[in-house]
Amino acid sequence: MAAMKEKLIRKKKLLTGAGIVLILAVVILAVRLTVWHGDNDESGKTTAATTESASATAETDAQTSETTIKNSSSTPDPTTAPTSTTQTNPPERPDQLVVSFYKSYSTTEASNQYALWIEDSSGRVVRTIFVTSFTATGNELSGGVAGYTFREDALPTWVAKAVPRNLSEIQLDSISGATPLESGTREYRWDLRDETGNPVPDGEYTLQLEGTLYWSSGVVFSGRFTLGAGAVGDIGITTAYNSQEQQNRNMITGVQAFLIHK
Image 1 (tube, rainbow, N blue to C red):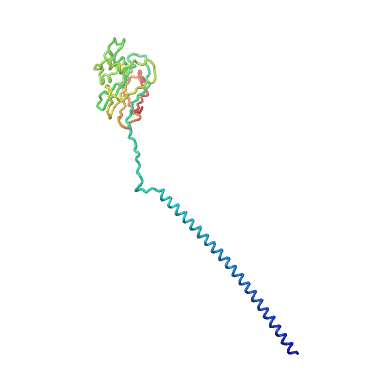
Image 2: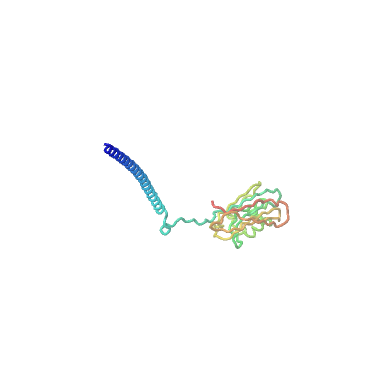
């Protein structure tokens, strides 16, 4: 009886130990399954992230490629790009010579006479722009004869160069005018034509402005210029008095000359 009871106790212990072992095995298996699922989740996330990154990289590469293609298509090939046909117009020849100065009226006799003319490079007069009528044609004071014969001091330089005795009355009338009886600015324009109305050729010219100041004392203002394409702008003026006489020395002042387009 005692032996049988001892066997039952041993059998019970064995069953209890086996149950414990079985429970431990189940727990270990459950833990391993949990870890395995966790690893699979992380791997899935990593794989998804990698896939998403690869997709973004592919999209960026596609955009970069598209931008490169657009830039390449918008950049002209220098070997095939059309050349510009725009041409710069050549500079034009001026249309007019403008001369201005201040003329002070003098109440003394043998004064107030002036002439403006243009010479070519040889010194030949190509056009008289203006001369006071007393010198060119005369008046009551000169007894009806030209002033340059009545008073030899009247504009001697112009008389020697223009030779008015060889000009007709019509020619003299066309270039002469009354002596200004008031002080003020005078302006004269030359249309770049000669005495016959023809355009003068390009070349070197000189404007001359002579004034009879007081009897034999006088002044000549000169300005050399080149006439041609693009020859516009100021003309430098030089002044030459023929004596030290101070009477009416400022009869003509502020002489300026310009070549311009109309």
